[in-house]
Length: 197
Image (cartoon, rainbow, N blue to C red; front, top):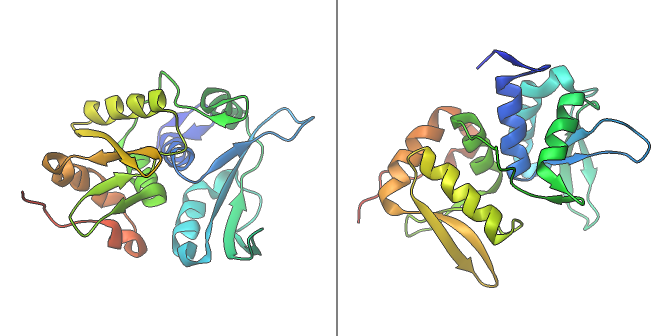
């Protein structure tokens, strides 16, 4: 995973893509030419933010810092530098400022693990979800197709008003095997033991 893609390594690109699918954001400041990445999580996820920073520090100016969010909660975040490769990703993942799923997107085990650590959850009934409510139904169908290409069967599940992705029980073990090597200790609570019907 250390080969270079443009000026990002494959690992860096995978971490960034997984973050964009989850809680990360790419932004372009008006008047500037290149995008930057913002990683912002609750202070409870400090170890996770530090982990992401350790993988992306080559493209970052400064270390993560604590901040009070607009709703008064304590958050922990860092920003990357502005970067041409991030601008390319911004143009793929954003239309009119809204996140979309590019038609040429490819997932790998690292991006899948980061996405799950960002936006995945499990229930007591051994159900596993990817909280994709921010994406359109059409984009969620693209994600289902990408999961299928990795051998993961999933479907859309209505969560109150919006849809999200539910990994089918027959694929949970495979899903966990794919992501497990990349799940950090503080996020292992999201893993599930082998599920049986």
